[in-house]
Amino acid sequence: MTESVYPSKQQHVPILPEVVGESVGITNLRAQVAHLLGRQGHGKRLPSLLIQGETGTGKGLLARAIHRASIRSAQPFVDIDCAAIPETLLEAELFGFERGAFTDARYAKPGLFQTASGGTIFLDEVGLLPRSLQGKLLKVVEERGVRRLGSTHTEVVDLWILAATNVDLGAAVREGHFREDLYHRLAAVTLMIPPLRSRDGDILLLSNRFLARACAEYRLPPKTLASDAQAALIAYPWPGNVRQLANTLERVVLLTGEDTVITDAQLALPAAPTTARPVSIAEPERGRHRSLVEGFERDRLLEALRSSRGNIAEAAARLGLPRNTLRYRMSKLRMKAEDFGKAPRRQSKPPVKMTKTPATRTIGQEMYRILVVEDDPVIRNLLVDLLSDFGHYVESATSGSEALSLLGERSYALILSDLRMPETDGEGLYQKIAQTWPHLTSRVAFVTGDTPSPALGMFLGGRNVPILRKPFTSDELRWLVERMLFPLDP
Image (cartoon, rainbow, N blue to C red; front, side):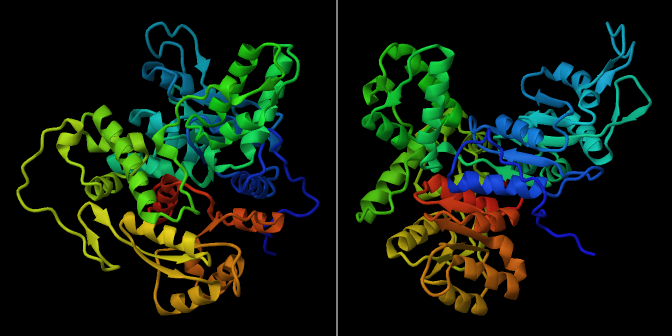
C-alpha cells in the first residue's frame, strides 16, 4: 500500500499563527510546512530543513513556530547562533567535553547537541560555521551520533535539525568555504521566506500588529496610521525587512507620546536604498525605465566592489550573486577597474565574447534558453527585456496552448508562466507538462499577480513550485532565475 503524499483530513494541520501574513509567498510557505508536518509521526525521521531569507525576515521565528507545531513541541528547542560563539569555544559548546580534555576542563559537560536530544536544534547562520567543524556536523546529521572532546565513545542523539542562513551557500560551496555534502544534507527541504518588500498587503497587517504591541508594552493609548503614513510604509523597500519595520514602529510609538494618529512626517523613514526599487509594470517609457534601473544597479555594484577593494569573489558574496553573474553585469554596464579604485590588469588576450546562440557557454558567462508565458504584452516584454539583459536567450508565448506547442518543438532550461491566462492557464500548463514532460516540472516557476486558491497553493507548495509576485524587482527576478538554473544556489 502506497503512502499518500498529502496529509489525511483527520490530521491536524498547523496554522503557524506566529507567521503573520496573507501574501502569496507566506501562504505558500505555510502550505509547505503544513504538508511537511502532515507526514510526521512517532518514530518517523523528519528531514533536515534549511531556511533561507534576507536578514530580518524572521528565520528564527519560523524555526520556533515549526518546532511548536511539530510532535516534538514538548521537547527541547535549542537555538545556536553559529556566528556569535567564538570559534575557539564553538566545538566544546556544540559537542561537549570530558574532564581533562583541555586545560581547565575540570568536569565533563554535555554539548548542545546532547541537550537538544529528543527535540529540535536550530543552527542559525550555519553558513558561518568554521570549515574545521563542518565535517563533525556532517557526522551528526548523517549518523545522529556525537563524540565529546576527549572521549572515545559516541553518544546517540535523537535530533531534528533546522538550519538558517542569509548567505549564498551555493557560492560558498563553489568557493570551497562550505562542504557540498553538508549543504545537501542540511537542505533536504528548503524553505524560502520572501522579503517584506514583495509581500504587498502584509506590510500594513504587520504594522498594525507591531503598533498595538508597542502601545500595550509601554502603556500608551492605542495609535493608528494616517493615510500618508500607510502609503509611506508600503512604498518603502525595507532592506532590514520585518525586524526593521518592528523597530521603526516601536521608535515612533515612543517618540509620539500621547498622539493617537501617526503621520508620514512622524515616521521619518530613512532614505530608501537604491537596491530594491520595484520594477514598474505599467510604465510605458521602456528606455527611460531601463536606464534608471541600470543606474541604480551600477551604484549598487560600485558600492560592493569598493567595499571589497575590487575583490570580485568578496563583492559577489556581499551582493548575494554568483561571481559569473557579477562579471557579466559589470561587462553589461561597461564598468572598468578604475571605477572602483582598482588598477587595471593587462590582458594577455582579448576577452571572450558571447554569441546569441542558445547552446553557448562562455568563460565567465552562461546563456540558457528561457520560455516566458504571459498574455499581458507589457509584462511579457518586460520579462523578455530583463532576462535578455541577464544574458539569456528568451522566447515567449501568449498562452499555455502556445507554450505547449513550443515545448513540443524544443527544450527550455526554465519556464516562467503567469497563472491566469486565456485558453490554457498556468495551472493547466503545469499539469500538462507533468503528464507529458515530467522532467520539466522542476523548471517551472510562476510570475503572477493573482492569489492562488488554498487548494492550488497547497498543490504548488507541496511540489516546491516557486512563485514570484507582481510587481517584482529586477533583483528578485534574477535571484529566482539563478536559483532554478543553478541547483547548488539556495
